[in-house]
Amino acid sequence: MFRYNFWPAFAIFDSYDYDTVANPDIGTYLGLAEFNFEQSITRKYRVIIPFLASGINYTFGGLFNILAPNTFPGPDFSMCFSFLIVNCIFMSVFGMLIYRLCKEFGASLLPAIIGLLSVLTCRWTSYLAGTPMVDSLYLIIIAATILGIKTKNSKLIILAIFIGPWAKESFIFIAPIIFFFSSINKWKQVLLFTISALIVFSFRYYLDMHSKAISGLGLENAFNHMHYISISLKRLFSFHGVYEIISICGLWGMLFIFLFKKSTRILLKQKTTFYMVIFLFVVLIHALLSVELARMFYIATPVIAIWFSLICEDLISTYMTKNKNYKLI
Image (cartoon, rainbow, N blue to C red):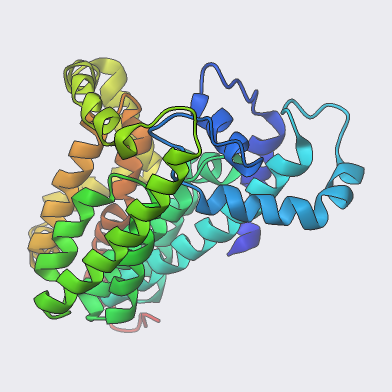
């Protein structure tokens, strides 16, 4: 899985302009990897991937610099390459979770692979793997949450509870889905969420105390994102907004044409759970609170991949019914 992510991501990594003015997120995460915490109060607490990249750079940075091309457009080849390695690993894990999701929701081998390919070939997959971003960890948390609920895997749910808040603050929208739909006892969840919150907010308080400004743990700035809603709505209902949504699926979106088949519609209706519908609503909230619609809608790819795999499953099953000699793997 890693090699399928690495080369498209490397193409982005080697050609991206690393403009920290146009994309301040990159500047923040590169700064965090250098242990410079005077960063955006929205992003400066997302330290796991920057710290992992920093560790790889500390260990192998000398070797990476020897391999550095003369034309690399970024500020620090070895550090950016360390982010590339971390994000490719995490996106590979995300891909494996996508495949497991497709299988758990009833797809056989070939349809499950198609569901996986719909994610691996998305332009945002290589972008998030190839640039110094931290979305890959949040995507793992999303996929692990859905898989944990579906399979009643308490380990995956506990992982999400403790790692989710470090991945992104918007995990607060995922937490209710975990609380109401996971198989873990509610009182145990209250205890787990409380311990997780104490750890996270203790770290944030410590970090704020050692930064120039006390940001109120970043919560005040998070509420300021509300003013993005009107801007995002205008973009969403514009031609550009429609294009951004379509670009997430790419040509794979043409599989939705087969929804005209009654059996396909029935299968998707049977397999689409209530928590998946709520999750899609949560994705919409993510998008409205951010001006980057396409990148936020990409969060929905676990559900979209499941749908694609089920559509293919129904098509193959129909073909099998008409051709008795065909054997589905």
